[in-house]
Length: 268
Length: 250
Image 1 (cartoon, chains in turn purple, brown):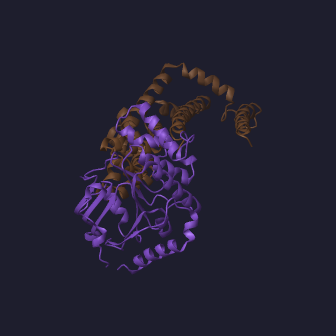
Image 2 (cartoon, chains in turn cyan, brown):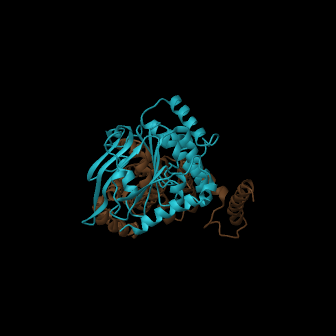
Image 3 (cartoon, chains in turn brown, orange):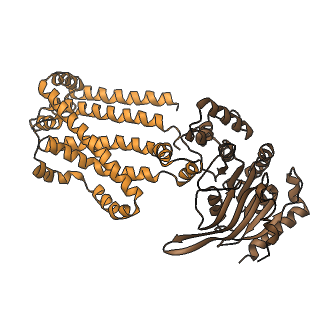
């Protein structure tokens, strides 16, 4: 394993970190056997950065995201968001966007976006105003009254993103949000996500198994090994912003993607 | 074919059946003593509906069905949810329910008469027994139709247990629950009527049974028509509710 000392500047400007993960371990019981899902994970994400986690399937990257969202409790280590530990889900601090099929089919697009606000008893008019703003942000103005089954896969994920952002959390976690989409839609959605990120300046932690997607979107990529998941590499993506499709054909892009692939393949 | 043409075709079919019912016995193509014409049956229906004993019979049957339905649905739903939510209970009880579900309930009727007699309680007990297992199976299916992703989303939005129950479980289960109400009503009605026809001194089923045994075909057909109309009315009103609540169902 590569030495990672330079990855974790735990001293100095730690207070500026939006996400701070220290010595995280996670073990779960499966049919009386203990499975180590995550081992010895530490990293920092600075505010406003777009960080992508890639790794082979089953490496625990989704588990890591669940822990960051407060949906699961790690068996060891600490997770902080803006300096505060995350004990339970808190949509004010951390928004989550899941894979496709996470919208409630009995609610319209607008009602889906308002869902987190309804749970907090936000007044109706206030709710609607914020949901409409979000709908516009994700490029779906005019589709608010549609039900999920009337929307395409890409549109559904736009609604999911709007739902994740409606409480204006500083951090947005995304668990393979475009995995179920076809390649063309996926490219468009990646581009759209970068635009939304640029407008909102959120800190985004994005999990994927697509190397191309990782390089295209990220400021930095964290590479995870197979189970138990460890972070085996951290790569700064030096490509200029705004990103464009043409960049994918460049040598730099290819070299970065190649490096991630070699890390995944070489990891034990 | 447009929707309107289909509706017209259906109405045409209904008119044809009713016309045949009227015409065939009158022309003596079928035996009118066995198969009285529609006009006769409707006249007798109006007549018997005015009779005190028939009115009392309808009231008794309605009471039995209402009580049986009112007990079978919550009881079955409770058992169904317990079986779906608790892994241990599910593994122990599910096969049993499945087996009993597949057995025709009518073969147990003599036992119910031995235990409960032939009064109100026997009709109610057999009505519950007829509907209980379908309610259990449907309630289990309803709970299992709740998607884990939806619960996860709600939790990530900070939902409390109560909010998850009311805002995720209930709407997820609603279409199947409404369907369950409809089907269990049919099963309860079938059970009660069967019990009344088999051994009873009161209720619409017992009246119909008597008319049949005494070869009173016009009364028999009037009773059948009455029950059919009631059953269709109940079924369609729940179905209407169902359609309104599940426009999103795909």
